Image (tube, rainbow, N blue to C red; front, side):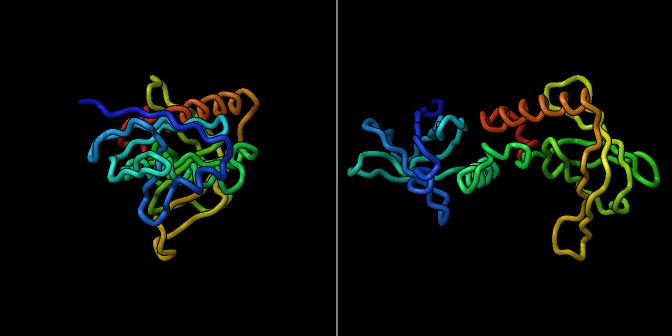
Length: 210
């Protein structure tokens, strides 16, 4: 049996705060025809025109107002964090600042030759790459970024803006700010929008969303 599907439309971002409980990662979904406890639920959520698909398991019911309490799966973590950021201040109005929390395979020019790694996140302005040997700040980097569903990787150039080492108690790596011409930037922007849509619709490969 497939997942039960419900649609939920919120007229404002503030309504998300009322239905999502960050303490146990549950959300309340109003419905007059609730499925039984333990059922897998797909929620097509519209937050003021911003669409995201969430999946979870029904763990309880409420009568006033009628609806179900849904425990969201761990695979939804990045989408929830992204949604919380949108609610808190405006990813819709500051789209160039958002970071897509997705894992893409990257080959880049390291000091000792080509190196393979993964992205931590990416947007139109830059990317963070995991690596135990980050390049010095201000180094120029050429990257080939594999995009799901695309036969050819995206060729990008940027400059190292900051580095994180193992001593910082965070996954080591380097942040890179892109240096692109108009055509390259237009291609990147289109790609980011496609990736965002795939992320929010749950269409990215499971190894792409951490």
